[in-house]
Amino acid sequence: MRKEVKEKGFYRRVLAIAVPILIHNAITTFVSLLDNIMVGQVGTTQMSGVSICNQLFLVFNLCIFGAISGAGIFTAQFYGSRDMEGVRHTFRYKLYSCLMLAILGIGIFLLWGPQLISMYLQGEGSPEEARQILDYGLQYMKIMLLGLVPFALSQAYCGTLRECDKAVTPMVAGAAAVATNLILNYILIFGHLGFAPMGANGAAIATVISRYVELAVVVIWGHSHKREYPYLPGLYRSFRIPMALVKRITLKGMPLLLNEFLWSLGVATLAQCYSTCGLEVVPAQNITDTLNNLANVAVLALGYTVGIIMGQMMGAGCTREEIRSTNRKLKVVCVVSSLVFLLLQGLISPLFPRLYNTTESVRVLATRLILVSACVKPIMAYLNATYFTLRSGGKTWITLFYDGGFMWLVTIPLAYVLSRFTSLPIIPLYIICNFIDLVKVFVGMYMTKKDTWIQNLAK
Image (tube, rainbow, N blue to C red; front, side, top):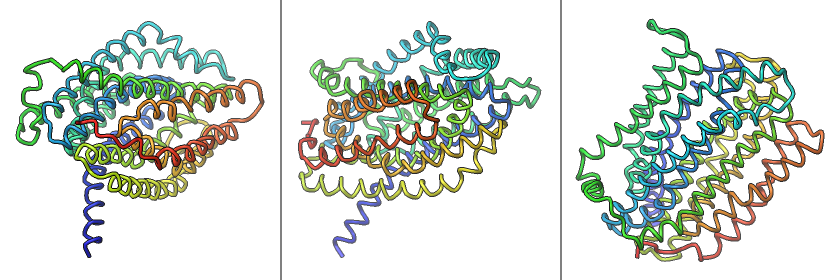
């Protein structure tokens, strides 16, 4: 009976953390999906321009995630040891990092936007179509730059609240942003309530406004409920962070920032390699990624939950056996959950591409790519849980080589060689480049069996 109660407590805690994160990500991704479908209804060229830009913005988004992740390791452990001043210091570190990255990102996209988009327009297709995709992409990109700063700051807030067991507030903020985005998409993309149809530009404007809404909700709610968030009072009373802590966070966090940059840049590079198989691959992959992102919300939410629970347990001084046992259970939950989404994604694969106003050949190609990405779900779930496990104990250099390093040392060279020096079609190329991650599964099993990743960083 005692064991059964303990098991119930474990699953209750997992759900308390994972469900709000899952709902937040699901709502956000679902609106992104609707956004994508709405733009897809306007035409294939606008959809392709938006798709390419979103591949590039993914690099920025994941760099922000990497910047807050290093400090987030310490946030979870400080909160586990009930050190609120330590939480404030890590929060300030996140705010500084996110602001600097937002300014850097805006500069890069303004200076090299045309060149970055043009890299994806190398496949077979008409020059006129490529020029239209470039024009639509540049217009979309310039508007989206206005939302980089609020996006970065809201991620710093939402990340901290989640690491301190307050995942509901980011979920509510995300829901408010999603509602704003959805309503404005309907009005601006197609032209309702007296507005002229704006297509992809309308989608960009809606997204930017929704990001300001998300930031406003999480800041106002958090700072007006001081008892619930004891680390927020005094946050801006001082901008000082102890230099010793800055050094520790930077040493642990820099590999995570570098990893997210390398991994996201690797995803963009893989997409560019796939695009050499023809211009039809760009819209087909966009359709695939849109559905895949929605199917991945549970996998990502559970991975994030693994990192939070492991970090809090180490900060609270739990025994190694307790930590190892909990970690094993969490991995099982992650992989089993992924099987459900594998099945759902497989069932919907022939239907989803028909929501887009595109050619039949693009729909057929998208269906096949969706089926391949569905089969990869259990692999992704295990790798995600392993990544957050290693990261929670501060083994960030290992995660760099495990994640981004593997991408650039194995996956990217493989994709480059196969796409440039063989006549391999897109489907077998896509299968090979996805299932090569099986190698990482066995490496991850070996690394997490060792106890070296279990470290109390809050001491």
